[in-house]
Length: 335
Image 1: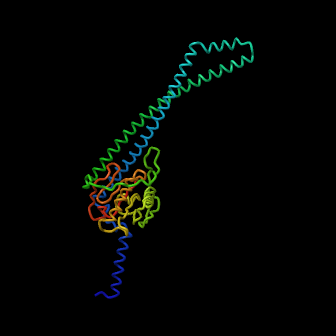
Image 2 (image 1 turned 90 degrees about the vertical axis):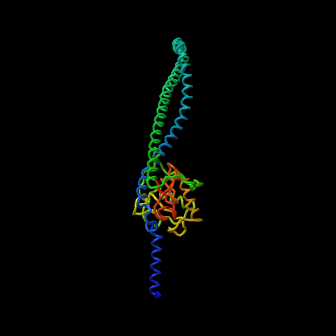
């Protein structure tokens, strides 16, 4: 039988281990980024990051094309009006209207009438010249708009090729790790609650580093987009224990671009989530997907499945316990 002092020491040691396990994400999630998963994460980070940027450029180019096409309709309508006016000017010149006006001016004996005639001629000539200049400028504008449309289409074709190549690279990486297969059911029904984050002028996401304080117990740094996603998740009601920065391992945690959201209310538990915990993880994963474009999500991993912007939900084959298979937490990686 243990003596009282030994019982106290044993209790304190056990308590300390539990505190460390819950407070230290590296201890709470052993091997999450280890083994073949590290290779998968590195391939996914590169492929899906490039895919997201190409998709952003595609979307921006498509929107630009739509705007240009709307402007072309207006330009063509104005061009038709100007061409009618130009025909009238040419017809008048052919009939000698300008010559007749000059003759009228020369033949005038009244100085006041002469000044009036000169003003009238100046106005008519100026009006006709302005109309002809606008006609030429409008024709040039239309040609430039058509060239811009052609450039936008070429850009879109280029981005589609980039997207397809990176989609294939991501799927190949998952297959090599034993995942990437079709899944029967996945989290769905998430509600969009966020606004779009800032983009570059071409539609891609600005590069970000680990520059802001990590508000979670992990005590490190995270990127501004990761902080925004963390705060937005909190506002959406997903307030259970979360850990972001981790100095060891691979993937996005050391870069401050990933957070792990525990399914259990008390923290990371070395057991598969069930019941209300499983429902919480499902809802959180669905929310991440619904807000992916606005937040800049690169991928989501939950309960042996991974969501990618290029392919949707696929099987994810993590090797190990609940941490590696992501059955006790939702992993969110950001662009």
